Length: 640
Image (tube, rainbow, N blue to C red; front, side, top):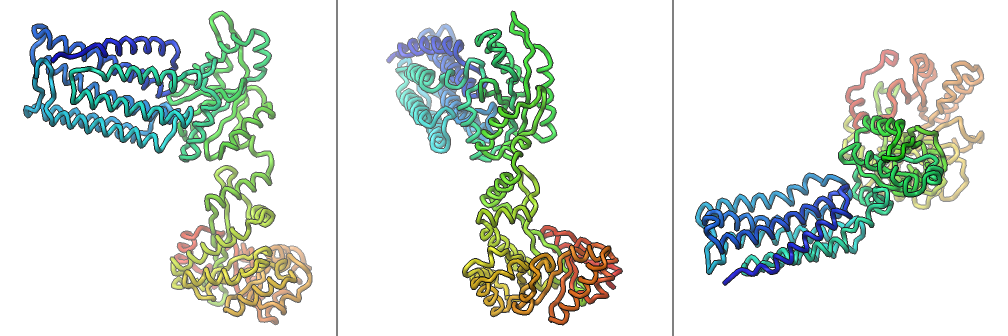
């Protein structure tokens, strides 16, 4: 039997033509392009080794048996590496980043390395290849090892095809996976029928197909050598889906239309190509996209926030120097916007907002603006956006402010307060957030979230063993008017095995004044099941106080504004003192809010105040900090 090299000759010729063509058309900014080059190179090497091994076997005088064996072993290894490089190529087609996640290097390269080591160990023990009529065959053990390696890479290609999609479109994924199966299939055929060399030929056909059906530079790059907007949007979509962080710099050219009119579109594109080359080289992982005719976007992998200003200033400083095209020299004016995805530019919608507002804002030349500033043109819109994001991600936090008992001289309760720290806009004031939530109809969902978290916190930490008798939870007017609110909240308490005395609901004066059957029904239900109620923020609502004797309140919480006013206003002081007398005559326990000084404490103790709440003891803190505060509580000297 003789080897058939005709397929190799044709395959090598095709690969050389593809190599030359791709050199003229291809770009090197993406890993997929580099891996296409690598795969072409491996196939050229494999075809050359095919021919050399046959020549050595036909003319043994050219080389000894050891050389022939080494050439065949290298040939088989290169055939496996064809699958390795194509698998890496397929993986690179699923993203636009210049560097793959480190795990993928292990997934793709480690099995190949193991296969080479095993091949060498087995060969040392005599399981080499035998000659049958000038046809060299590997020992079956080595053939099985190679077949397993090929099948492994086919499985990896399949998983990539199932889990990911190529950045230029989902339809090309199946195209690539089919090509992988064709490559693997012909390698398995040649492995067990080595007379005809068909791997290089069919691989060359696959590379031609990839060149014209998948790896088309004009679909990725425009005339400025920047990647197209569609590729940018696809890359950002994947980043947001995978919660991958990145840093972007918008470079908006000022008066680009004037430049284009003065020197022509083609020459203006020459300047842009120089800018794109600089931006692509400014960092190893920099990717440059053309979002609009006069706007480039530089996308980098996640950066520390300390590096943000340095990168933007470095780019701006380069624009203070002229750009040269060989025969033309010109200054290019630009303004810059920086932002972190997804911390500041939270979604694709926000990305489009930045683009639109950058177009309209017309910032001064050389200015570097944070993306958050461009997005911050409507405070209510920001609060609503933060609210919607928190609802979606369940990122509300519950803080606890201690309540001190003057009789027991210790902390016996806490008020639960909702907090929202938005990743884009920072701290959202509770009053603004609650007002927006009531207006948008999501206060009920937030209220249920807070109450559930409070019940979980009390039950899991066994607060009663620390002397915390109850937690106060605020009910808004909207909640009070919710049908079956009391039944639903009692059911939540039962799910955590909490008895009714562990919770106290705070109802504002506004809510108490609502003449509504549902409100009365909810309050009656709470009273029937032994849940205590507090009248919250007394002194800030309606002047009608009939609710004090018509509703079953146990506590009165006096608003801090009365206490603070009483320090410098005699009339306010009279109101404060009479409020305490009235509460005591109505057998209401008084909780004074906003206690911050020793003088206030002395005055309140003289008035017979039952409970203190304020910054003198503690500001609202996270749950774990509240527990630590209670455990380490030391009685202030003024309270002794």
